[in-house]
Image (cartoon, rainbow, N blue to C red; front, top):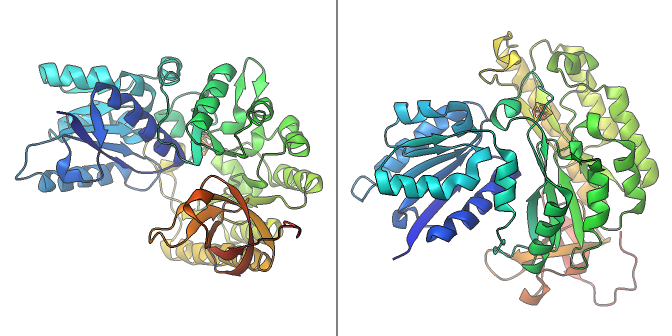
Length: 442
Ligand code: SF4
């Protein structure tokens, strides 16, 4: 009888990618994914350390699992991801309901770890930094999920040590996968139905494997005939090199939305954060790209209320948002992460941070509404990803990643369809198919 695994994923796109690869791996030892926790013989939590109180949330979740399985046979409980990496053995000591703890650089060892546990009932923690072996193993796996838009990790880890961030501690130093391994995986994803690839890395534009850079990868991947769109995330302004900027002149498949986290509009705060870039450099990148293609848009991440942020620093951030007209961005109030430099700094008044966050989010929402409104009555190319939940329409994405809903058919999935936008709200565009596509696409 096959075993059932329930995988719950917290956090970023990299975790989503990792969860899929973990599933590809455990399938080899007979696990089948289930969406019904009550059927599971194995409960795997892929955790994220970015959010506040991440560790406590994991123990809370385990408490919930314990209750869910109170009158059933206990499942094998595995904690994966960045909390697993940061806490390692401590997790099994604190919560004996946990059986295995496995860090992000050890997923290639998960089958042996599970089989060893089943055989000997040895609780185990596997948290070495071993990115090279991991990708050597994982690259041999065929992805069978068949998604239209698929993640592809090309780089992991970070050497930048921003003062607020745990990634350098949980994901280890920067590592770039070999060029040919990535191209092979891209081809395999396309063979299994992917039309869009989102290249992932904690510092994706720091990609450098024996001198080949992200720009080289993009140009090589777009030669694969089944690929219609390429995106990458998450970038650092410091690694926005000239070759990467120039690639926007030549690439036909690279999408015109750039997620480039700035975190703050104040040079003083960027220095306190140890961000290693200035606002002048950020704006230089922005204007250079706009000159290449005026339709390029930027999205970003913002940390509000970082220790030391004064009113003028906050106003600088607000002004930057108005100037760059960021869309699709994320903003959070600073919260300290144990083990980081910023963890020991004096917090600013919560009421002030809340007010500032509200102002920032209102501005970001306004930018998004204006952008979406500007697309009404225009024709957009939409890559169709799936049917809507009620199966009456189809759901796709514009070049700017904005969801678009229209009356399409099941066989539109995977195609790029010209859609005339009829109305919009902040998060979604609604349109209709244009039969005669002689009209100009925006
Ligand atoms: S560059 Fe990104 S991943 Fe690296 S430390 Fe800074 S915020 Fe974290």
